[in-house]
Image 1 (spheres, one colour):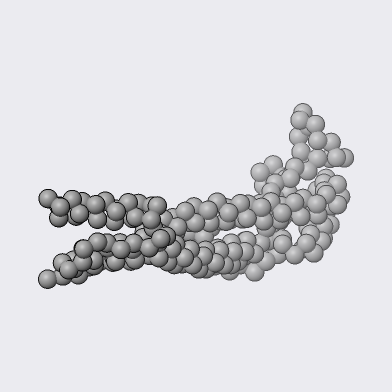
Image 2: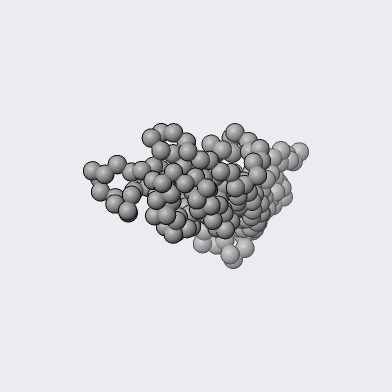
Length: 231
């Protein structure tokens, strides 16, 4: 009675290749996603830094003269950058003015921790542009990037990368499994069937496997069988 294969080696190899490839690409995805997110946040901060250079001196002068209307006007001018989320001016640890430029939308707590929201920068405001370490700044300007923009970028980028890499993992797993099935599983299955056939004298192998491990296995079996028959 011929025995049947309970679990195909092709299926086992496909699962193994899929898991290994998935883990490898997951690590690559995490590294690349982290790099892309940090790069985008750095670009946002650079844009804010370039925009604030133009108003840094007049903003400090407005604080010295206590002209809050001018302070507000200068802060509103930063809105043209399109990425501003919030601007906070503090003097002696006291909030002088706080302006929201973006509509607040709920963001999951896990996403806040995962993406490092809020993305912000704090700029000291020195009188007359003096930035010596011994000089105390007149105040501080804290600028925050629109958190919704950062969250959308992170979510869309992650979704695209996961979809792309899952498809890539599936393609690689199918391709590798086909190669293994074609080169190893099928010859081994043929040998197994021939071994179960009592009428078969020798295992027939193709020319492709004459010089590899499968060919060595078949030749060794044929040689051993001949020796037993001769005895």
